[in-house]
Image 1 (tube, helix red, strand yellow):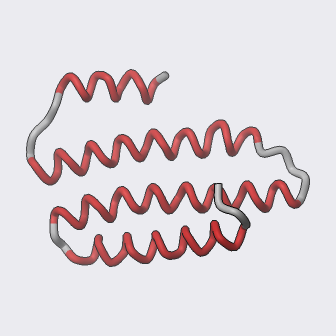
Image 2 (tube, helix red, strand yellow; image 1 turned 120 degrees about the horizontal axis):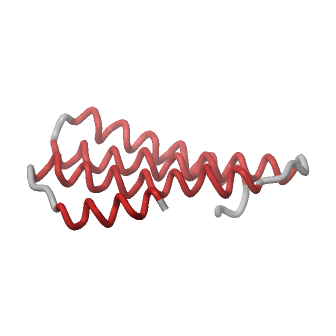
Length: 104
């Protein structure tokens, strides 16, 4: 969690900007990196939302429990999907472990 709401918004904006540059490059390596950065930027946006909720005394349990956890699981899926996209190889054992992790 960032030190303030402004830090979270700045970090999310910078990460989204970098992700957009990588995605627009068209290179397989950079598309993979840009996709992962989009998910990381989303975590920063959830962080900013948590800051707002705390300032307004709104319970943050649902965002912390579902939003951030879902985004972290998406990070794993996007990273693996990028690996498959970039290399053209699949790892069935890793896919099984990933499926168990996401469904748990």
